[in-house]
Image 1 (cartoon, one colour):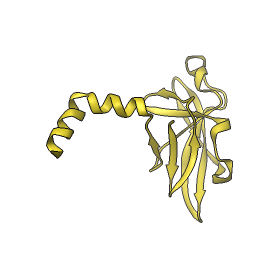
Image 2 (image 1 turned 120 degrees about the vertical axis):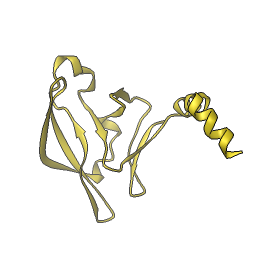
Image 3 (image 1 turned 180 degrees about the vertical axis):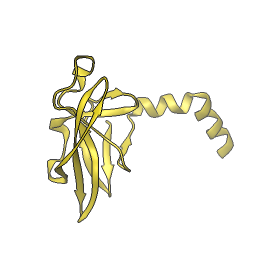
Image 4 (image 1 turned 135 degrees about the horizontal axis):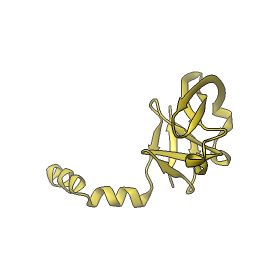
Length: 116
């Protein structure tokens, strides 16, 4: 199950993520809201629309604007409505399927050979 982790805390965890441009978008109900504070930051993506941000706070440390979402995405990005993605040091742990696929990729095989 993919999960987003920062500063030792699981910020989100769900089997229902959508991957867009390399980012896992987690459903809102999977978020640990106690770690998120609404930010006043907004950015614009030409095809997704206006993004809003959350700052993540864990154990007194802040990761400013480390999560983003599109409250009203444009039609081509409608499937990420109600979902949040992460960056700025938030680690998104891959699913077992992704781990297996990476291990069997040419790059994964080479890495395993070099370790032996």
